Image (cartoon, rainbow, N blue to C red):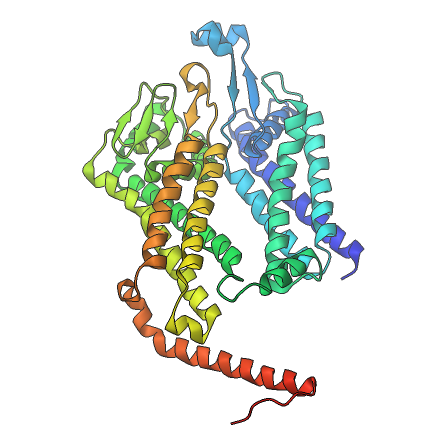
Length: 446
């Protein structure tokens, strides 16, 4: 595909990603302007608020400064007049990342991954600059450098990851292929170890996030009454309910990130000197946000069972990578499996999952408001250690355990595995004969 066309398509992807995010922030405010303010307010005044919401959703910290007159009317203390908000509604960043991954993979398959990633990154940088310059807001402020770099990184890093993953699968006639060639020169038991570590770590982390999403869904079923009571206590009209619900959906990935930390064991904070863990909950007075009604009021032995989720995720990842390693080894994998590569894969899966958990904790921690809410979210180091060890335990069970201890699912696979191994061995033997003939040497014949 021509370089110019790849650049244009990538630029379009980045522009659409930025435009969708800004529209998602502007649309609810427009509804409020139409149905609540009756159109008497100045509609362009909605842009600064929408721009700041988009920036916060793309990880840009904001500083909120309230007018002293408003503080007096609301009977708020003076120290509440200026505070930081840095915990992002991650639904915005997740949407941008999905666009970026798709764009990076498409650019790589067109043979122009660098052009595609660079074009999308530059367009995102331009959009971030335009938003920051035009978002004159007397209440919410953002520093210029984070306002430019963080939205750009939210797009550029997933786009690069998408391009690299596509290049690893399809080849790029460049640096990724050279890395592939270097790994192919390793012994058969080691050549796929880096790939299996990355795949296994990603599988384990996705499984843990899935368990966290399931925990949130179960909490909605069990504690939905508390959420409804908080909605009723807020005494908002139908439009207010819609706006509050949309805001909570924007923070749903953030809530799932907190739940990952909760499942892993360390839990998260919702203010200084607070903790929400499976073993117990220690909270002070909370704002009447309906979604906070899902928080458990106290610990329970049954809640501790959720900690088995990361162990199960590690076991699933380890089993899958063991099957992949056995397939890579061919006939050797059906007779013996080298233990050292399996141990390295198990350790790598634990490290990868712990690293991903730490990154998720960083993205979901920060400040939520004034006073004690300057500290909220999980502790990255604790989450990394706990999640890494739990996933490592599960992965070690299935990767290093004897075959007799493997899951019964394998009983449906041996005949097919043997057939595939024999086919691979037959193909290798045929290639050896052809290579020997091509070099002028005779090959042994039966």
